[in-house]
Length: 187
Image (cartoon, rainbow, N blue to C red; front, side, top):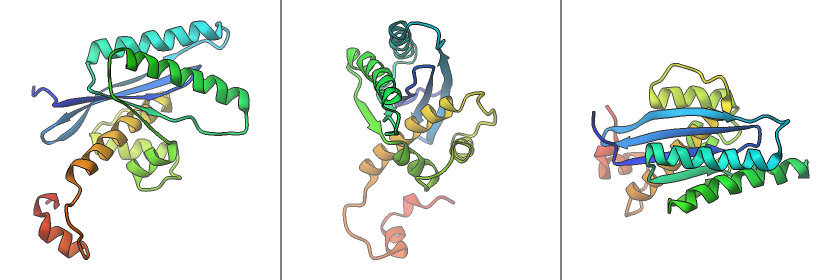
C-alpha cells in the first residue's frame, strides 16, 4: 500500500465524548485511516477527564504520526459553564499537539459544515453522508462526534488544497476557469 504524503488528525473536543478522525493524503486523493471516540464518565473528576483527553491525543499522535492537527472551535452558546468545560477540553487537546510540534488549525463548526456539504447550516447526518461519499465508506459511527472530528480533518485538507491550487490569475467564468485549469475537470 502506498504511504500517504500527509496525515491529518481531526478532533471534535468534548468533556464527555471526544471525537477523532484521521485521514491520509495520497496522490489520488484522501482516504479514511481511522475514526472513533474517547468516552469519559461524567461522574469522574473533571481534571482526570482532561488528563485522559491529553493522553488519548498523545497516543493518537504516536500511533499515526500526523503531519497536521485540525480541531473544531467551540460553539458559542448561552451556557457559560458548558463553554468553559469545552474550552478546557479543546485547550488540553491543542497542548498535546503542541508538545509534538504539530501545526494546529482551528475551524468553526460553520466553516467545517460549509467545506464538507456546501451549507454552513447542514445537520450532522448531512455531514456524515457527504463524508461517506468523499471517503468511500459505509459504516455509520455510533457517535456523531467521530464524524465531526473526521469532518474537521477533511475540512483542513480542502482548505490546504485551496491554498495550493488557487488560480494565479482572475477568470471571467466557469468556461474561462476550465480552459485555464483543464486538470481540475473530473471525468
